[in-house]
Length: 84
Image 1 (cartoon, rainbow, N blue to C red):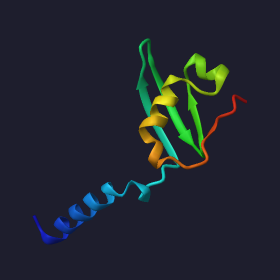
Image 2: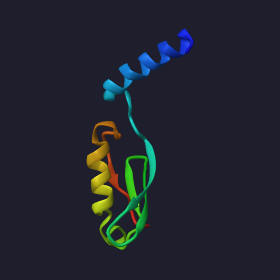
Image 3: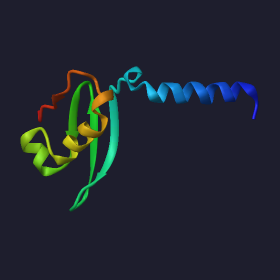
């Protein structure tokens, strides 16, 4: 392994320990729920999920779980997505 990649690996390790360096502004995932798989997105501080519960409440167990997982790195002003 050449010395330049060794330096990049070390820098990546340091960055990974400093989670405040990362601010996620958009994100897409497939969430495997108990009954089906759902596409979940986070864009411009707002969550979206294609499940039926989210359609009526602007939040659901899938978005809340991902928010808990990613909380430190999400944009600090998250708002529910409008259904319009």
